Amino acid sequence: MSSKISIQMNVPRFEVHAHTMYSNLRLLDCINRPKDLINRAIELGLAGIAITDHECISSHPEINFYQKEIEKEHPDFKIALGNEIYLTDTRDMGQKYYHFILIAKNKEGHRALRELSSRAWMNSYWDRGLERVPTLKSDIEEILKKYPNSLIGTTACLGGELSVNTLALINAEKTGDTNGAAIAHNNIVDFLLWCKGVFGEDNFYIECAPGCSRDQILVNKRFPAIAKAFGLKMVIGSDAHYLKKEDRYVHKAYLNSKFGEREVDDFYEFAYLQDNEEIKENLYASEFNDEFINEMFENSYNIYNKIEKYSLAHAQTIPKVEVPDYPKLEQNRAKEFPILCSMFVSDDKVERYWVNKCFDRLDDLGLLGNNEYISRLEEEADIKRTISEKLGTNMFSYPVTLEHYVNLFWECGSIVGAGRGSSCSGLNHYLLGITQLDPIKWELPFWRYLNKERVELGDIDLDLCPSKRPKILNEIKKERGQNFNKDIDDLSRKNLGCTLIATFGTEGTRSTILTACRGYRSEDYPDGIDVDTAQYLSSLIPSERGFLWSLNDVINGNEDKGRKPIKLFINEVNQYPGLLEIMEGIEGSTK
Image (cartoon, rainbow, N blue to C red; front, side, top):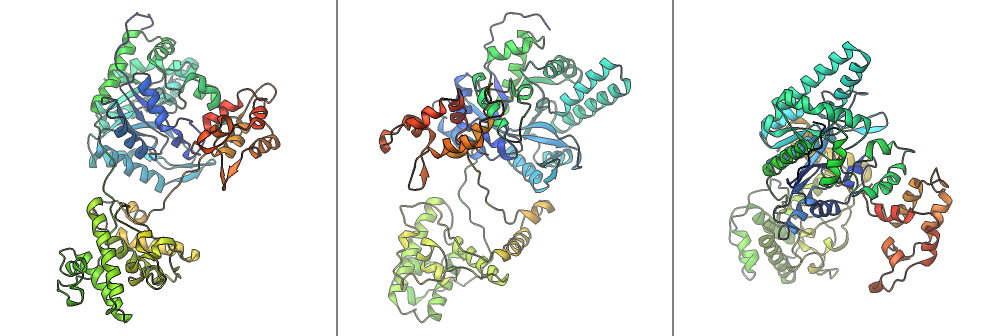
């Protein structure tokens, strides 16, 4: 297979292994912004690309929505959603955490990805200074029985179980270690037979990388024979952690900015989104010829054909709670208010509860005869109904559900705040006991909280006693977990009744400067730029109303905002060749 047969390489290629900045969730790893990565794939003429971050699927909504954006201009380009998991047999400490690629074939496959990822994170633990989030082989077996033929698997990179054992086999053979060779051989056999049994031959591939490191060449040379022995197809995965070859300097600096020196050269020298010619040249080092490379391209296109386009978007849903079933009774007290009147006899149980509860509370307060209050409720009900129709949901469910949980907060021994911001503008919130300010008395108009032009779910922020927070969360998890479907596993039932919102930190202008200075390397600065200098450079960034200028505005100015380039900053940064490029490459990255 070593001869270089000259064949025109016009076979479409689908990239099966690429990362975005969301791979930085546990440790600095990648500088690719999702849209930039996809645009680069289109620019290179790829048929599509699979996004496979390190045990993180947080980029998927952004990417899935972007697929819709580019649909008209690039109707045939596919973006597959995947995950590079850490595959193990157990959750023992001190073991090897093997890399493995999972790609969702369809919407059901993405549900499988979500369930597997949730299990990994719910079972996370610390080992050798890192939070470990392995996926057990038994988890994959269970999930694929639940969602058969929904996932594609590949053996991933040098960190994969196949590569690790192939290298061990090669090294044992070279040293005459027959026992070591036998162990590695048996591990390979067991692993590949497991993969074939779980995924099937049509949904599992051996992945090689277009790299030229010693270890990569060794495993690449051995893979074709292994693939043939097991009747498996091979594909190429670039394992892209940066976009272009010339971005390697930026990526290297980014990785070196944390935890001291990283062995970035061996691991990441070829880990960028390569074009077909670069792949061809790099794979010649593994003695692959054009014909075999074309075959792997065709295999990747075979994956492309198995990927369905689907949307993760859905109508916003509101958690439901059980409420008393008020009978359908016409109310003379609401006859002048058609929306409220219709709600008393509505087929919707939640609507009947909402209107009866609000009227009962008005009665308790001696305000039932006050048309100002009834008129305000009519206005709020009208707006809620209108937005319910536009969103395809029931807007009355939100305050009803929140009423239930406010009661729970009090029962847990927590004081509940009066309410924040525009939420206090809702009379129905006040009557349901969610907020504690009468908006009529305090002249708070409802449109501040919700109006017919603002088609979205409103939100209500409340303050609770911090010491009661764990108890509150546990009570919600316990209550909601009991109502899950019967097929939900016990771990999910105990943990997913109430989940917390996670936000990502990003490299702002000042943190970008500090990070770039730590990772910068040159002959004059072999250990990076010192902290004092970095702090000085960051102090040159202007701010307006508490917001720092972006790096682009600092360098190029912004006519629309009346900003001119900051020459002092530019002059200072230019004393360090390449530093500005590092800053521009990492600004805005998640960390």
